Length: 133
Image (cartoon, rainbow, N blue to C red; front, side, top):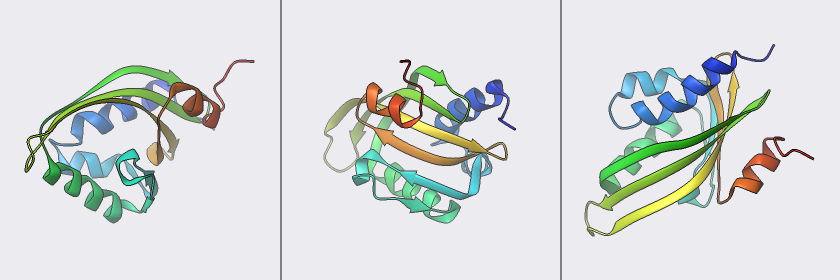
């Protein structure tokens, strides 16, 4: 049975809302078998909650003054695609980053089980089987 669309939308938005502020809540929304393919790591996968939490901690150590804005959410039967806008400043370098990317989420057992970051909307929608013919 597919998850309730409201739950999927909430989980995706909560992923970003809790990313830097609430470690326990962030951990709670991840499925034990979560796979994460982050754009910053050339999509090298992290597998399992512990690896996802390590990646999260590493990201937070690198950036300062960061902000996530979920600009668009496109829901399908299995997957959700979110347009994410990140602005941040490097802690050590002071370099400013302003980037948008599409994150594809899969929900299983009311938790996020897969996250794959895409460079563009079309590849994200195609991977999530959300392209209209």
